[in-house]
Image (cartoon, helix red, strand yellow):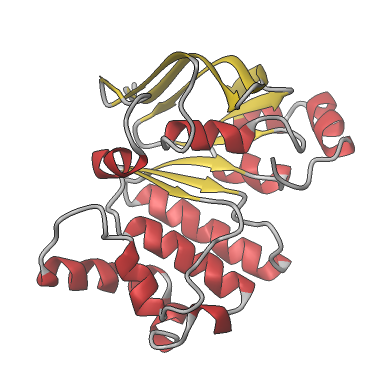
Length: 245
């Protein structure tokens, strides 16, 4: 049985006086992909921001590899092995592809040789980026920017990679390519926590899922069980299952 890499216990979090997460508890086991599902405003993105230290919970604990991280700074959490690829990609438009990738190493000390090995690994995963290596971030298509954002996250050498809406705004053929890459990254040993608007793809790529509604977890199950549950699929797909929060 896989051990828990990440545990959230009764987490309350939000934005000032606005509570976005109401005592949620979840776990991510080493080596798996977990997807957070829910409609716009359910609290999915807030969950990732709270794990990565961009928000601090007002109640509850977050444990990563046996140590509490809920009061640590974001840069410290990155050094612990958690990389967060936010919604909207957010590449640096005035930097080249190479320079964007190098930003992923900013929170750890690495030698030049190690950096070049990491870049070579990213370019092997995303061969399109190799021919775009010297181009500015602003000149890349949406799909290429998403690949670059994931590649930048991988440059931090994470053991847990958190992806927020990687399919948002991309053409279907590019979405399939991105999700094939997510599966490959997971097979290579990186644990993945995914927020995804595309329910079908989220269920296909992940091992387990949590369904959030109004900042609360209302269901946790294997993705196989949810995929076979027609009532669940109708309820989530029938709601505004697209968009981000």
